[in-house]
Image 1 (spheres, rainbow, N blue to C red):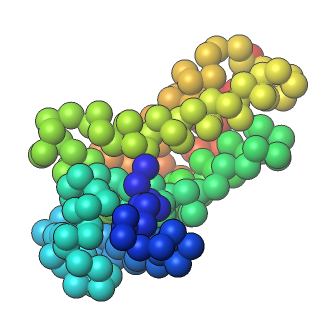
Image 2 (cartoon, rainbow, N blue to C red; image 1 turned 30 degrees about the vertical axis):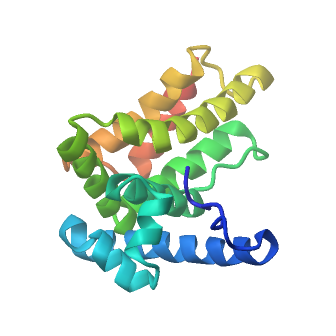
Length: 198
């Protein structure tokens, strides 16, 4: 992930790194904000540069292209908005996280997620880049929490942790993506409980 680019080669490391982190954060914030409010048409590199105060040249130095930047902007925001506890009892951690995901999908995060996936499909024809830069990281974390619950007995199902994660979050995303009715707090609660049952 390129959320914290290295300092320029000609900048002293001690003084350059903090400024690079600040600039990178400004770029990511601008990319996310523009994607949420104006969609893909408004989230151009030129607009992101103007909004963040960071030059286009610097942005292209840190990210291969707009798609990679948008994915990283989404991941940064999702990580902040959707923390997944590794200290709470696993069923409680997943239930809380799934409920937060449901709420987030109904706001800016949901709009940006759809925009980023649309950009992936338009530019590459697949969602592989989104999976590599974002989904695989979050899926691995979720599976790790689920496996901990299987080991301590708080999660009865012994199906592969990845399958349980996909059952929960894949169902939520599918219903959100296609606007299917019934996606509410009660549905998500039952979804998690049924997935974890023996």
